[in-house]
Length: 114
Figure (cartoon, rainbow, N blue to C red):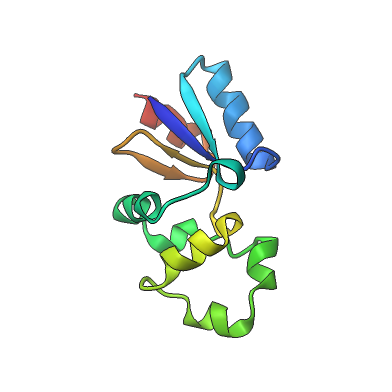
């Protein structure tokens, strides 16, 4: 069973959800804003993908951070910053326990579905 993490009104999340539904794939949706995040979730993702791939440096949230926060961002404090600002996470995140995919790509989703 897959879990899709994101924000309901994000266009990329909407594309991913639409694609999963068109493939008749069972998944649950976890909204960062309403369902929250835990350090354990983020640590699990960091064990599967590079922490930098989870930080959306093109987001409005990123642009609103002060320069000191941006400059100090590293592996040691990335999880705390993402917990504090969940909209900084590149969306969507799709996982099934082992596989973690960041962003939406039909090709990558097809491979993950086996």
